[in-house]
Image (cartoon, rainbow, N blue to C red; front, side):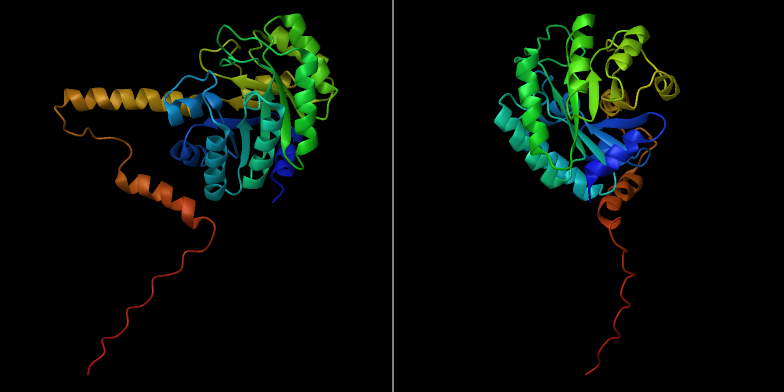
Length: 289
C-alpha cells in the first residue's frame, strides 16, 4: 500500500486532519478505535521506551522497530513519525527515512533544532542555520519515494518563524510545521507565509500554543493537527490514581471500567483484523478399536 499517498489525500481533504499521539502498542490500539491517523510522538516514545525526557536520547532503530509493530497491527491507519532532527547527521536522517518507508510509515517530521535538542514546547531550544537545515531536508526529500515529509521549525522569534516557514514552503516538503505558535494571530501570519502549502499545528497540554478545536483550526486554514500527548498524559493520571486507590484499599483491587476480558478483546483485534477467523473445528468422533 502507498501509505504516503493515503496520508496526502487525507491532508488535502476538506477540514483539519487529526493525528493522535501514541506512545506504545496499547495506546495505539485504543486510539485506532477512534481515529484514522496516529502520530508517533518523540515525547511519548522517549517517556515510554526509556523513561527519559524528550531531549535527544532516542535511538532511531528503536523508533523503526516500534513503527514496524504498529504497521503490522494497524495496517489501515496513517502513521506520521517524529524523527527529531534526523538523529543528527544528514546521512543518518536518510537511512532513517529509507527504513521507515520500508516498514510502512506514512510520513515523517524533520525539525531544524541543534543538539542538544529539546521538546518543542520547553525553554532552551536552538535552531540550525537555515541553509544547513535546508540541505538536510533536501537530502531527505530526494531519498523518500512515497513518505510525506513535514518540515518543522523550532524558531522562537516570530520574524524567524515566518522567514523559515516561507523558506520551507518553497521546498518539496508537503507540509510545514511551526512549533509552539503562541497565538491565533501568529497562526494567521504563518498561514499567509506558507501560501498554498499544507500547514500543521501541534496541540500539547501545557504547551506554548493556544487550545483550539478542529473547527477553529479549519477556520484558520490549518490542514493537519497532531495531538502529541493525550494518551501519555491520560495514562499517567490513570495509573497514578489506580496506585493511590490500591494503596488506600490495602491491596484490594478496586472496581474499574476495564477488566481482563475487555483488554484481551482489544488486543486480539491486532491479530484477527487482517483475516477471517475460522470457525472452531468440530471435534472428531472417538475411534473405537
